[in-house]
Image (cartoon, rainbow, N blue to C red):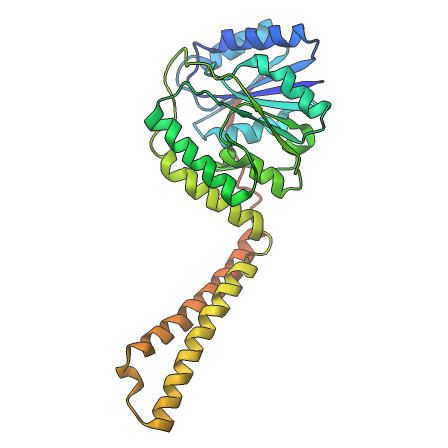
Length: 311
């Protein structure tokens, strides 16, 4: 199979027939064998009924329904497990991603040997204040921190080698930073393609103000986990050792001043409390590092989701 198209959706009943027909036409025109995997992320409209109807008409359409809303990362994670195509395409269900871009992205993976190709919505049809400006800020921060020169990390339209999606794990809201996760997994040839961004035809966006908080926190999580998930003691131990040494040095100096120079009582000086707190802080960081080492070895069930139905 050439392509697996993974579509995560939440309450997108109006757009699904048009989207699947559009994808089908593009694939047939380019002679690409394909499957469409639609992940219903706990919709409370008729999205699942429509997916079942579409599946009956087209054997290439498959569907998975979550019992409740887990989020886009969970949907993509399950879709990656099911994918069989040599190239995996992810896209949103709101018709803002253009299926006509799929053949070119496919060729960039197959012919130019990219591991991952990310879409760049250079001209966006989104509200400037609520989406465009925050998006530019997040992307600039992600480029600075990761060193990956992409303009639009959060674009839903992406293409991957099958080996990439089988080698990475996403959870929480980390779908925004899949290129960073892929790079940390050793897939370093990451490309970008300018894609056409459509205006939303049906419904409204499902992302609220919480993304302004979740985005930066998830970026910090990705960078920390990618560097220290297998060796958390390397982070907590170093910081803890520095803090402990500073506290020890302060208390040693105060002890020397007390017993040699007899100038003042140790506890009368604010520096004593700074040294004491530094030692406590350093000790706590050491303990945190040991606990993190234990947790990193017992997190096999963090991607467990309740699937209600499957086609």
